[in-house]
Amino acid sequence: MNNTLIKGLQVVELLAHADRPQPLTHIANRLGMAKSNVHRLLQALTELRYVIRDEATGGYNASIKMWELGSAVLQKLDLRRIAEPRMNTLMEDSGESVHLSVLDHDEVVYVHKIESLNPVRAYTQIGGRVPVYCVATGKAMLAFQSEPFIGRVAERLQRYTDATITVPRRLQLEIDKIRRQGYAVNRGEWRDSVYGVAAPIVDGSGHVIAALGLSGPANRFKPARIKVFSEQVIAAASEISADLGGGSGTQMLGQITHYMIARKR
Image (cartoon, rainbow, N blue to C red; front, side):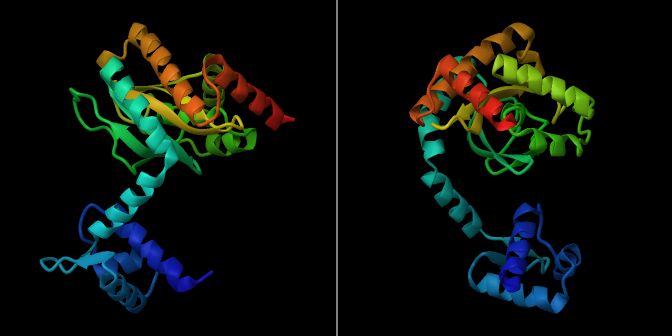
């Protein structure tokens, strides 16, 4: 692989996730690179408009071009395009914010979001990442991954709130429950007092490729409401799956179960 390209991308990723301009020395130290090498990379990235230099501090920021590229990619995602009408309907029916997520290694990536009409606060952002076992959309996808994958996740459980699952056995019990009922619940496991309900989305082969979820404050996610939300989320996820060629309703869950059994053999 091209080392210069790899190092350049590492610089871009660091700046994209930073919340303030980053000094040259800090970038070099974080990435374990020589300052002279980082300086050359920053010059090239600045010329290409991927990076801008903050004149006040002398630090570097990722430019708006990164957002433009990301938006262009998102616009081309069939999943996002197909899901959006169902997401709008789900938001209107539930009154809660709706998320569309995909799995990237052991993290959830939010690829689309429909904000509630009366949000309390912004809990997530498009492009944001969260450990897969901490949120409803993540658990809805995790439950239908291979056992070796689940095992690797279980070995690296970390606590983020008092409700975070940190015991492998408890995670397995949660996964078993999700497989039985077809949806996942987050009870403040990533952010205190932020709850969620989600269901998996499958393609025509029965693969779980994404998850659809609702999130909001804990006081609006009482047991009776969670039951209603689960039915709404499953229905919406089923419709998206059908649009992707993955069947609908109990057929969708049957496909997932069949796929899981086949993978264990």
